[in-house]
Length: 76
Figure (tube, one colour):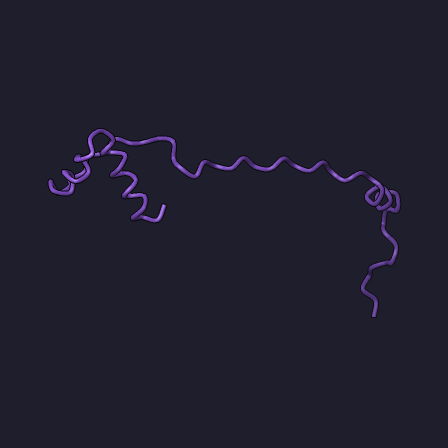
């Protein structure tokens, strides 16, 4: 049963060159993206007044506390 293939390579020089040529240099690793987004967006959000009051009780930074609570609630 002949398949038309020979046991020897068609171009012995190319086969030898492939065996003895140096391996290509490894590529540097891809830079990883930051886990936390750097950019914040301004949005309008309707929140119950009692919920807002709880976050504002501790003073400045209430928007960051709401953001942290939303991140925790979404599993981020």
